[in-house]
Length: 120
Image 1 (cartoon, rainbow, N blue to C red):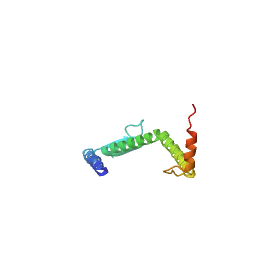
Image 2: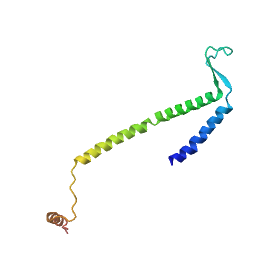
Image 3: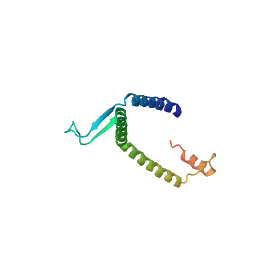
Image 4: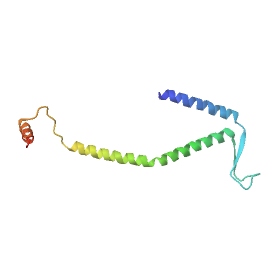
């Protein structure tokens, strides 16, 4: 099933990225100098597809980090519940439970009969 999903998602995305890279090979100048637009102090010239894919990758990274940070309370609760389960399992293992018998012994039967007397 995972191979089918991977094939349905990965290959079309790969084809899309290759087509995007082929169609957008023109160069753009990325400038980090807002005051000098004609001759910027620091500028990078890159193909358009590199800028687009870098922006996409940065967005995916920031979205993943945001989601991870937002779900921190759920991970903390899961760790606390896991510790509680381990403590209860250790307590249950330390407690010796009497093995159930199919037929009650004679003393158990006598105790039950004495306890069930009805007072009128």
